[in-house]
Image (tube, rainbow, N blue to C red; front, side, top):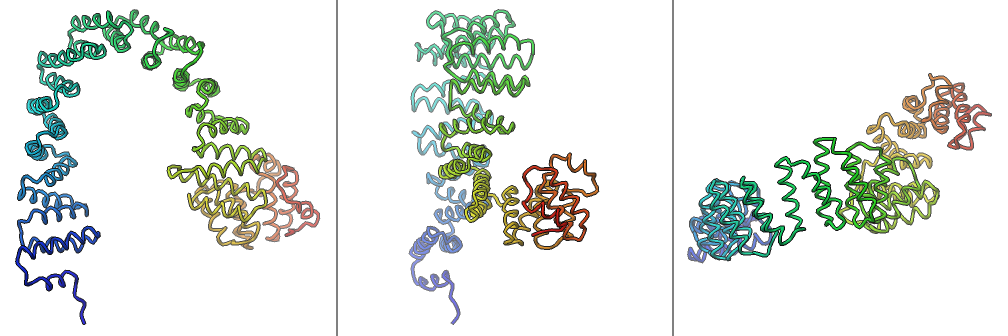
Length: 571
């Protein structure tokens, strides 16, 4: 018996019902499919609803939503628009249509929809605000102002609305009307001196210096230390090229003992801008920094700003870090200083410095896995393997979904190295596997994992594949080349092993050249000798083994002396 489709079965089952009953039935079934996320069936059923009633707005609307879900935006918008035309006052259809137009930045189409919405819901100021913005966008300033008036009638006096009306009147060139708005704003809050300063600043920008200075004087009489007034006065002195007065006032405010921190930082920023444009300001700024920093520090931001200045002036890294150390004296958990110093000590390979900063970082920011990572590495370098393991595991336990996968991969990789040094091979290989889950191309992990597998002579094919990925990424890295050559050697593919090992240890070089190469550790020379020995080139092998012994760097195997004595490879 042939399979009857779901839709056909429905059609056959309700064929005897009235048109409206038919429509209601299929519409309900369509809704069920949509809610069950069976969108294909829902689309078919909504379309059948339109076959019954082509004017049904609810079916048109839901078909439109399905097309929008399928990213067919133009078709979906057309259906929603048809639904709204057939049910003109439906607020849901209007809101959806407005959102579609706004997302497309189609202001011309959105405006009439929002006007309709505002008529139907006259108390919704959010619709009016959007409408005012759109009228401003299309350059219809008069209508934008009219809509803002409607908002004021609805909500009463509103500073943001008044400021926007000021801007629009100013844009139209109607300065008298613009300043009426500002004066109204100021009069409504007569005790708000910051607002009076804003009014004065706008007069200053409009070129009415006399009126602006009058307002500044009014504010000065009531609040002589008003921060905004002081900044506005500085702007006036600078813009009117009264440079001596400007410099004197700025220095006075900057060095005043009770100047607010925010004001001081703004003044320092202006100084930095001046230095950027004219380096002759630099000595004065440095004096200001020295004076401020000599005082008991309450806030680290001045020191942070000095460090930024030192970086800009390309002062020595040590000088910048000295400032960052002072930051930690004031604010021990300051992340800017902690990260800068951690990077500095890491680049210097200063394990004690890395340990100190990492411990501080973990103390104040235990959720930051990076501090655990660097501390673990520093402890491992000092052979404090148990402590390193504990720190790294603590970091992994504190990690969140927001931690970068690469960092988690690196932590597992270091943990694997430590476990291997502790002769915990099972734990080491599990840690390497975890590392590669978070970052499959972590080449340091791939190299170490592959090398340790080759030493056990286990999973050599996998080891070769992992090692090959490292040399594909860094074809000149002698450590990775040595690992790959060694794995091929373990697989008794001596010819190919030599072709890669020759890139690490070139036998054409003189003994002096090989011994003076600081990158060539003794174990690399020993590996090269082993490969040549297995190729039957015993003289070259003996030469390389003797050079490995001369390196005397503690990296060679205990069997090296026997190889030299017996003049053959010993497994």
